[in-house]
Every structure is written in C-alpha cells, then in structure tokens.
Length: 145
Image (cartoon, rainbow, N blue to C red; front, side, top):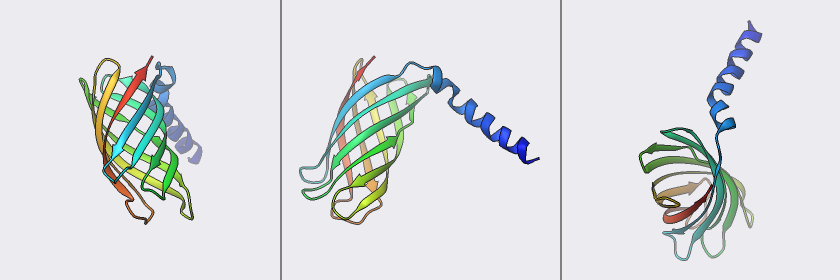
C-alpha cells in the first residue's frame, strides 16, 4: 500500500514538471528600484513556458534593502499569463549580510511583456526584522532567447 502511494506521488511530480523539462528556456536580466530610500534589486533568471497561461521560472537575486543590509538568494517565480500581462507569486530563500543569516522571502509581481522587454511592479517581504525589511518596487527586465 505504501509503495502505491509513493508511486502516485512521483507520478504527480513528473506530470507537473514534464512540460518544464522539454520547454525552451528564456533567460532574462532585470533591475528594480525599491520604495526604500536608495534600495535596489538585480536579478538574473530563466523561465520555461509550460503552456500558454503558465511559465515556471527561477532567478538569482541581489537586493540592497537599505544602507546596511543586503541579501543574495534564489526565487521560484511561476507566472500566470493573460496575453501580455502576468501575475507571479514569488517565494525565495536569501542569505543576508551582518548577523541576519538566512531567511525566506515572499512577494508578488504584476508585469507587461513587450517583445524583449518586461515592465513590472511588485511587493517583497522577508521574515527577518530589520529597518526596511519590505518594499514595493518597479522595474524592467530584458529577455534573451
């Protein structure tokens, strides 16, 4: 009985990610201006088109949260699309300088895709307590095939 349960679990995972394995990845580089004073974020990532309404993506992210705190991490970012618009929940794990160490990051983003450029706006928050540990942002990304 336990073996059947395990097989069903693996079959479900394979079904969920099988399209990602064969899709052509799109690479992008992005930059965001955060609502915190002089704060910014830089990303490099890729996404795989799963179907017409869903892209599954990852990115590495450097964020300068304030003058004293910065983080470097990886995010998972599925994008739910409607024509050129998208909505993307974001979940990540980041390493922070100073005595903060590791923390998870949560956020959401909306965007509009032009041919090679995406404009976007969103919100991100981290689980650590420091000054300016959350921010709204606007940014741009450039995509490469």
